[in-house]
Length: 187
Image 1 (tube, rainbow, N blue to C red):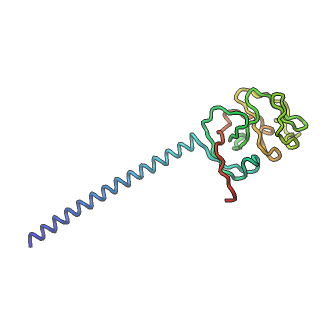
Image 2 (cartoon, one colour):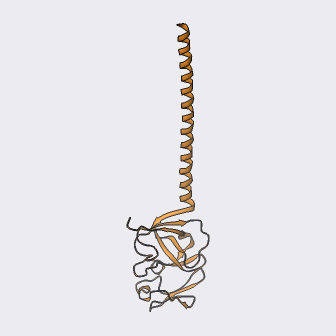
Image 3 (spheres, rainbow, N blue to C red):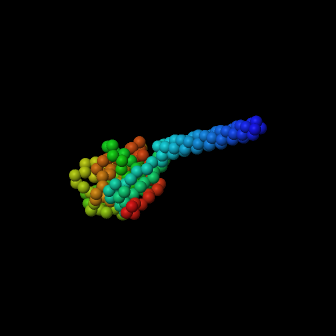
């Protein structure tokens, strides 16, 4: 009888040790997974806080290129821009999306007959009847852009607020270059 009691104790001791090892291994795995998840969360937060930005387009300012409630991914670390780039910028505390029409050093004029003239050359692809608004004081005269200033227009000139009404946009007001548009498609 003594032998069976000692054997049971020895068996249960080995079982307890085995269970404790399993719990320790599981605890280490859980801690490891939590660390990985925390690292991934911090990494993604920094990535989307410092390198990339995400915003929605509200309204029809950029139709047909970008529609209402389309999701935009933009690159914050863009150092230089060119004419035609679609950018996210902030003017008067409001985030907006527009296309760069003129670069630093260029002269922009919107004539009374609705023509967009950049450096003396009339831009042919502009809808003239929507371009000129007699009430706009910032955008209808001749403007020569200084260093780090951009003239940004929306694609739908009839309904949008852009450099014609808000004035030129400085480089530090540009949040980033739009790199991807994810269409809403009635979702």
